Image (cartoon, rainbow, N blue to C red; front, side, top):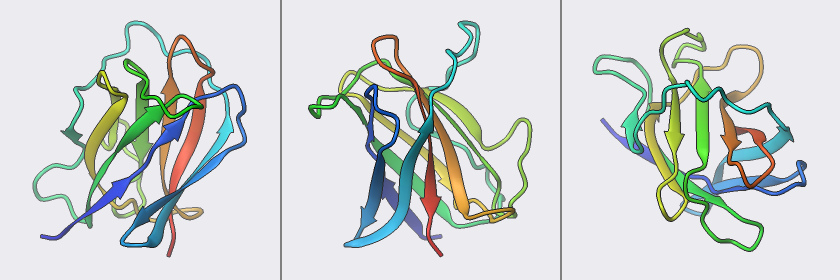
Length: 147
């Protein structure tokens, strides 16, 4: 099975109208765009380790490996940022206990996870990303897949 790598860096700031193209091989594969701020996540919410896979053996769909960094406005990595990712499966169906995880960035602000290309259901194919860190404004964004 062929995997595609998606690199997505997210910028935390007080300005909530930013967007970032995700490039692979010189082509835009996805677009992450900030939408709004979110309330803090509950302290008791479980956190998955960095580098997890959201798909299970036998799941249909194109495999993706998404990695990137959460950055300050001047480009420094933010350690300990919490990323909550949520998405539909390859058929465009959301599940209450699948294709979702809470990740914590490493000491350099990096994160990584494996997943499948989400199916289209009402709009474009996308992955919801919610980013939170005590020292920065929370960020709600989506990685949007063109085509």
